[in-house]
Image (tube, rainbow over all chains, first blue to last red):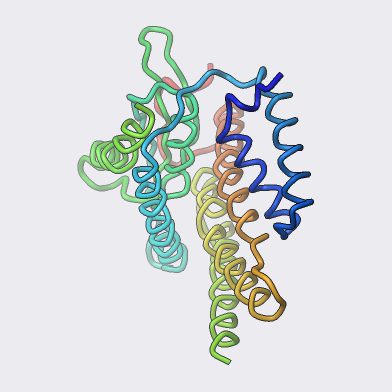
Length: 169
Length: 108
């Protein structure tokens, strides 16, 4: 009983989802939404992996804002690459050793990599010999440049992994 | 009037990016480069159209139209996951790739 009280954020998010879906904030809908949110949260909480709660809302907001801007530039850059007939893209793969450990944080990082300039996260593996997780990143262009993979690794780590580490500390 | 112009511009922009995404699917050389199309060019394409839709219905009918916000969130949650699964399957099937695949990720 009352499991949903231990997960106020999830319950609130589900309530918000319900209100957006029905598109009204009448008391009846709020009541129905709250009831459903509490039932669903309570009923499914047992299936979720334990995870750290993200902290520091202002850091999350800053991260989302940066992500939105990067998605804009990513689209323009990929569009230019696609439309330029003379250039052939030079793709390459990079193995990125992750410092993140929380599964949800890793999911966010991999998704971010997929949504931002010229990179898609392709696979996630943990080689038997050491404990670190490797993320395989495919880059659309730039494989001919000197030290391209090191630069890409450094950029991704600085730009996205660092803030995520702070959020999920 | 101004809203109409803005909505038209956003719809055109969205359509242009969706089209470019599809052109990319044809023009890019191998499976892994084609994977970049659906996760990017089309997210902005659909994003622009959703903003246009939200603007239009918020001004034409009473109340804010916020369904589009949900579509955006779900799109951004699912697009990277599907791209990741496609790439995983391609690695497993050893689809031809222009870029060299690191040893740790070659399926034996």
